[in-house]
Length: 324
Image (cartoon, rainbow, N blue to C red; front, side, top):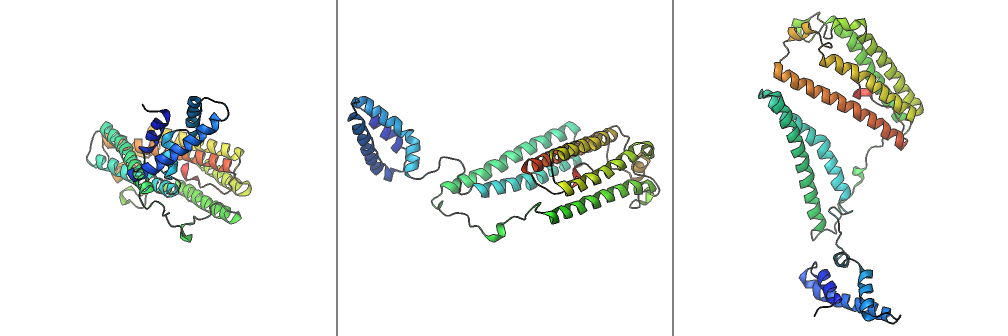
């Protein structure tokens, strides 16, 4: 007839390598016996004392894991940072390139719009799952391999560059923002005189000339406000007022720009016809969808980035690529 102690020792020892089970079982029985005897001396019945001793020891599997110093997690602390850095690199570099390649291949194959979108989304999910699963599996195996005591070597070259550290960093960000915004404003004015890279479109504006009645001046004013916003970030660093202004500027640019683009009012039809824009009805919808998703995604990330910098109390100017 088995006792509670027998059942507890068996439950704990079965998770250990066979060569360690006998010693572990003997030590564990002695520990349980000592705890039980100590509780009996306080006046408790032996059956109750045995039960209390086992409850105090806790989960037998966890006790066995601590005995052989085996971590009870998928990725332990030894390799966690290496796993996390690699996973972020794969998701920010490999995943977008692979998804873009799938979408581009579908467009070249002149597949229907629904199939292109469905295939691209399915490929993105599948690639993300595989990247996460196989990367995690490799590190989990490394964590539990015989040589797991050997840590990944760290060198001075692994130190990251300091970001937003001081006035010099703010100055560099401010200059980059102002230069980009200035070039963007110059392009809006310059495109009015034609597309020099396409001889057939010489003298033909890329953007619809009717936009000069309101929308192009509106965007030029937004660019000026963006420049003032960049200067404010340089002077004061991120705060909640500027994070709110960042959100307003994003909405003020993204909503009308996408509305003009999706309704066919942004581009000059004569320019598109002159350069022979290479799309048919199906591929036009695909390109339009990809552009809309990209612009909205970048705008959302720019807002989130501003909030993160505000929460962290980080200084530094924001590059307004997300809104332009």
